[in-house]
Length: 217
Length: 217
DNA sequence: GTATAACTTGCACTCAGTCTACTTATGCAC
DNA sequence: GTGCATAAGTAGACTGAGTGCAAGTTATAC
Image: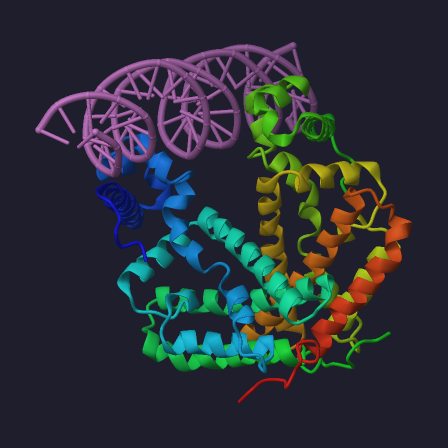
């Protein structure tokens, strides 16, 4: 895609990577709150000011790595085969992600991803910062549902927020278990079962689980 | 409860209120980001240092006002009549809140609440800060479901996150409409309909809405 | 009425993030 | 290759949030 890039572009990319990697390594070693921006800049051999031109905030040094996937759910719904309901597409995609050990599902053994999870989960402000992605994901999904499944705006928003809540919780649960030391193959069966349960709850509702009587009226 | 409080207690409470009110007034007038802690402290006639002993962060000057209700959903579930399913209790409680114009539902005409909503909704970082309450609410609800409805931990967490997501969205929607200028009586029918829909989706699932076939397999 | 504990204050400090003016490196035209 | 426009990087001062500390002040207990 971006193949005939000049020296300038390549250098920029390398600087970006160097800063990001240096920061993550320092945070992993000493803790996010114990490392200052100045220290990261020094270790990465750029000026403080340059660092800020690549990463607008300290938080971004870490969570920018997760930003790519924020609208994934929306894309999955938009690109689904015409005969497939949105929720089925999301379910299939998620289960597929688990079997591929896609880091976005939290189920992975890749060391860099684990380091990243450890840093984030060990730092409350970073966990909070991640919610921005959840919200963006909700909006993208709501728009996709609204436009491709002919749902009224409010219905789409309610559905999207429910779906994202479940997927988020599933991934968070995986991340926590993986960070706690379980290897992905051992966790896989549980992760699949949890995902099946989550999507079934989404499709069939909580009524049956919660001693139902559907609603009271 | 705290009736025979001494002069010291009363003074403290008054100082707390004075700071909080002053801050909100300034934020409402000039914008949250345009007002510094120092200005708030001066206007409230306390030292900067004292302000921080009442409110650990600038954010808390605003969102501490919403903190009371964060575990409300958990309490509702715990205190429900023994024959009532949790979701029905939450639904009833929420609809009741709407009819009482409880500010927590977003449906209110009380000027102080409207000012608060305006400041929060007009300041991205405060909106983000509110998510902490949502998360706390989820945890409290999950615990309540786990303990009083005999749900396994993961099931309870999944259910709780869905339920909170819907209630949060309903209240947010009300807040936005009310801030946009609709008076609560005009909005009430819509808010009730939206709530009914949300709780029905929770109880019966998204399957039917999303061109179902429940799940694939 | 004094001792004590709780509350308040001023000051100096660290760190995140921004602004301005300046230097250096790259891309490109010739 | 030379030169120039422009993008990237640097230095250093500045603001504002939040903290630590040592001293001052005030309610309360005795």
